[in-house]
Image (tube, rainbow over all chains, first blue to last red; front, side, top):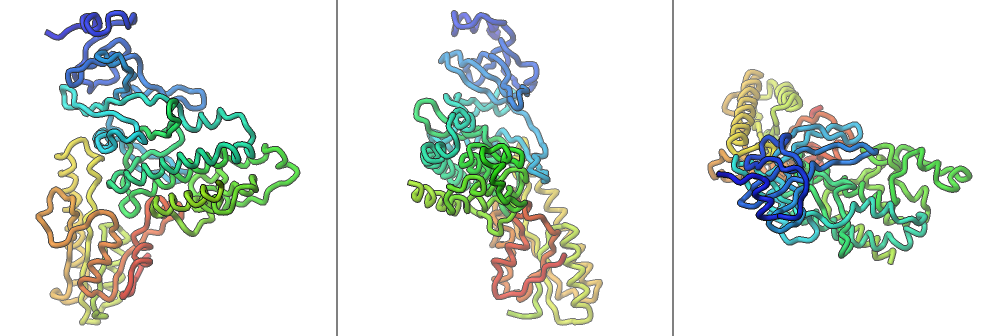
Length: 319
Length: 163
């Protein structure tokens, strides 16, 4: 007979939890029913569900019911369990709609391939009693890179001079990590600001969330490369700059920069790519890297090797 | 290379249909052309499916669709007056196909354009024909373009891009 949650908690975590005692689940297929106080049994180990994961944007919380924040009862440590949720959806990139798919087995495969590589989140996958591919993730002890940068309360010239070289050095390591994935025939699939984290202990950057996939046969890594370009733009600018934000930069009312459509990103046409127009101390080589992602570009990065080589040269010149 | 050997690369799309019709029109009455319709297998992404049987099923359907397209294209060329023995079809399987049976040459799936040019070079085609749908700059960056890549990477052959 299966243990109840209370029996499991009494045995494995006797003084650690005072909340609701729910049900024991070995089949995670109906993830909407699994909630705080339930226990998921996976590969003989027990995970007490604390709550559903939420994504926060613009002050609104969007629950991700298939992602459970858990306590691993055998170790007492926190874990994130990603349950199987097959989803096909259109990713909006500017005016383009890109068909995407959430693939548990892609993420499980990448977790295997990046095991012990600190540039990526760590974890493993295991099948529940119904054969669902559940990914058990170790929590990254850190914070989102963009939040970490936002918290640097310095003006842009100071940021550029003092912080950016160190950030770029670590970012190049992160780009190389993605390049290594590409060499394995894999893609990250969802490179964006909230998927690169800074660890509290080492300050190194860690990629998270590999379950998106898409199917571009002639340029399989194009979306990853564009994602890295967008992230670089954020890092160099300490944020993105729309027309409105450019007008709010100190001094911009006296010296209105000559900015045209070609200066903005190719895909997100409200984000300035030609940052040199508002921050003239950005050196030409670095600005040229950014301009590869601008509407006016005639040359794209086809591989990350070229992008990384250019960035490495820029970093050397900045030092 | 033989100037009268034409390779038409097709993917089952309307653009490919236009490319075949164009070649049929332009070679009408000139009986000494040898034409090959070439399709490179592009498998549905395995990660898009919950399990291998579902993926294999989709691969079978995709293959049937392309083979049907090749047969229809061949009929169109023959009906336009090109002798039957001068119209050929070729279906290059993906190296990762669950249906492949150790083909001599297979597509690694990294570039359809380079696969097409490989066949053109190996079989000494002087003319390569491809349809294109016309894509935006942003789409080209993100998705890549088979026709653009053929134009840039092709050598020792003439490229016809039918729009």
